[in-house]
Amino acid sequence: MGKAVGLIEALGLTTAVTALDAASKAADVTLIGFEKVIGVGKAVGVNIQIAGEVAAVKAAVDAGVAAGNRVGVIFSSHVIPRPHEEVEALIAKFGKNLNKNKDSQVEGKTKKAESKSKKEDK
Image: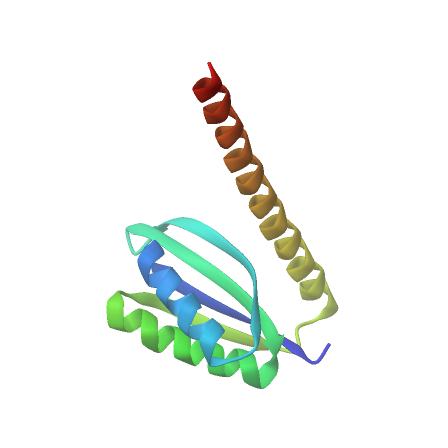
């Protein structure tokens, strides 16, 4: 794997989304996961995980940190170039969790729309 994993830990969702937006625009990277972390800096932090080629991830993390610091606080960031195969398995798990979250959100929105439509029909 000639890839890398990048991590950005931000204070709050707004800062994390801003960092992710800048990181995604700066280089060809993929969001592989995110986590809400309670207790970071005595507040709620959001950790975003991205993957891609080493240079792209480094550029993306740098851009994400800069953008995040303009609107809030970035607690930490790190790039792991060419991670060990055990870490690759963890990356695959993050990706599955992210897809599972997307699927459940879409399913929830569909059920709400169907319920609303049935109420309107009555």
